Length: 311
Image (cartoon, rainbow, N blue to C red; front, side, top):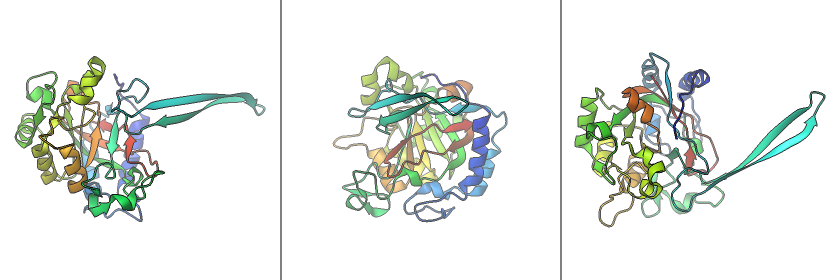
């Protein structure tokens, strides 16, 4: 899962995303920048001024691909799968004898690096904004809350190295951390989390995908409810980590994915999973320009992504 830094064209595309951010279309019109949209959540609190300030964080132009490769070797949650078929168009076309390949992808879009939309997790059938499951569910794509409506996200990114904070290369299985640890790590690493930020956590867990795939899924460490509530109070727009599920798998007795439920249903904060924070951690980069333009597959619950951090 080693990722090479992407160059030139990505930086150019990222700068175009800055201009697009304040004009991104939603489900039925322009985003009301500066306040949470009832279907899009906190991402619409990112103002053009926030994006412009974040762009000024770029000093070296070095880029970091935060997505891992999604393929047949990617460790999925049970029940999810990936396959691709490629066909050759071998009969030469035209006087210039053009040949080509085409492809067809059959995959769950919750494999590898991904964004969780508000249609992913609910509370007793109710999703963000009070939207009820029966009003949006359809086997051929969600009728509302699909990830195709998420506008481009171009804002300040924060990476907190929680492994370093705890003096480890990798956090222990199911280790959780909350507001006290997050606040202390931010102070020690010289950053202040603010409104409009995307916050990523480095736990060192990504390597477990190769070392022990079963443990990678079932025993991951991560943020706990106390930490999720703290970040929501600070006004962040998305939270991510280098594990496949962001939150500690120690949910607490009788609960299931409480951090997912709180962030997606209550706080209107998107979740970014399987983020490759290794290079950011190796370079000691804790503040950067974060850019994401997710694929716009109609009715999708999640989306495979490759956001970019630029310093």
